[in-house]
Image (cartoon, rainbow, N blue to C red; front, top):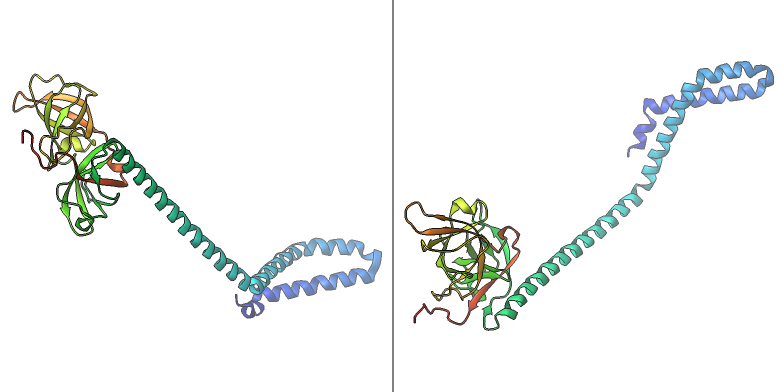
Length: 287
């Protein structure tokens, strides 16, 4: 705030002139007494706009002076408030992290309670979805140094998410069951019909995957639950995959197919677990 420039400004000079004029009128009125009441009223009417202007300028001067003399206190108060805001922001971030960690541990506990013989990784945070990938593949913040291996199943308490398809010491890429690059042996729980879960970009756009190679006499219908078959040694039996939402006949053969809605909402994943070991791992059916 430059008070020196203000005191040299035209606005300040006008204020002084108005104050001098008003002072003169007041002194004249006091000296002339009652005989000058009429003249005083006339002068008051004439000078009313000037007095209002003077009052506005006076308020501005007071505000400028207040800002000038209190600017240091204002700066100190702003600094204190900024520091408090930074502390509160850090506390909020810490709270959000704690909530996410609690939810991840709770999800993993739900898996362990159902499958006591499974070995799981520590909870892995979803850190980056793959760009322009409608199959919702993503990266996690754990890798080979955390015990993760290529093609290991990635799961949550709801069911199967996908498998690890790329691995580094501290990070891994997860390809989901929406991807055409992933094939999973599956069975329809209610009917016993078996097939292969293999993603299709046509259905991935709507968040669905596809079960192929169903027998032409299959009795699969809507709402049937599809789970992992556990016949290849890559996945345990019974991991939930999704529910049938549509069935049809392949145009190139008499085989049936089913469109499956996954039990996992890939767009809301924040943490996952990697299935490191389970009974029957590496053992194909019949071995």
